[in-house]
Image 1: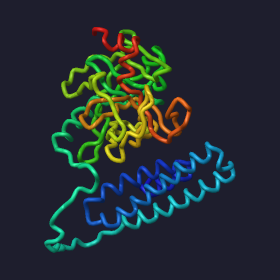
Image 2 (image 1 turned 30 degrees about the horizontal axis):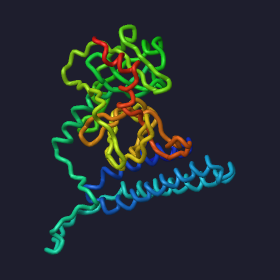
Image 3 (image 1 turned 30 degrees about the vertical axis):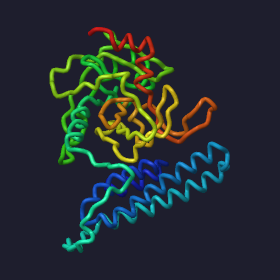
Image 4 (image 1 turned 180 degrees about the horizontal axis):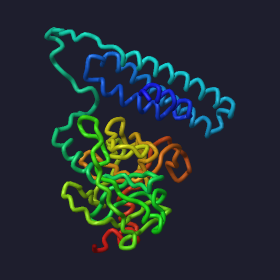
Length: 331
């Protein structure tokens, strides 16, 4: 099915947010080319429609909108997303000529666009790619989640992905399920889980630690856990994940920490179903949390809610005696 027909089909299935994610990915890929001038305002429309959806969800939960009013608003938003798809499809069919423009001298001086620099070294990017090799897709053939190799012989994920020892025996960890530079799928390596050797889980913390078979390749990294690294408000947090159970992706933009409520951290970084169990990194590529949920989540002891994605802080995990003992257990 062509991309834009597939995106329209998502609207019919009630998955407007997934359609917006596809549109956003497509448009971001055109920001460095001749269509950048058209792509940028369409990206702004994506942001506005996503924000409109969030406001609608919050209003529905708070009872500001009745069920009938919510349905009308949802239909209007779906219609706006369909209109955006039409615009993006028209842009996709355009092949504007390349025109060389000589800028006057007054435009030569360049500026930072925000209060802090967003420039990163290429070495920073290389380290992120190295650690990405530790992130795996966990699947039993029907259920998909994300996880990561946190020590040589174990992976971490969420309890709601793998909640029981017997269930774990049906899962495999797939490393390198991802696209290469030519957008072709690489051949993943599939590793069996070994819950009989190592298995610890907590429904309360929504975390599972499970053993894996030996990985003979030396290009699968390990993401170690440390209680020395924390997160704070306005930190940038990137998430390497398998959204919708698909090939590995990374979210590195629109990714600020919004709130801390022990043992949770709340952030704007994009995720999708299937991203549960992904590592959450600060700018030093140290893992500070394991992602597990999103939506209207509790933000404080009063029970106030915030619309955000949520991870469990590694500091909180390592302070739990049961998890600490399991993670520290010798191979």
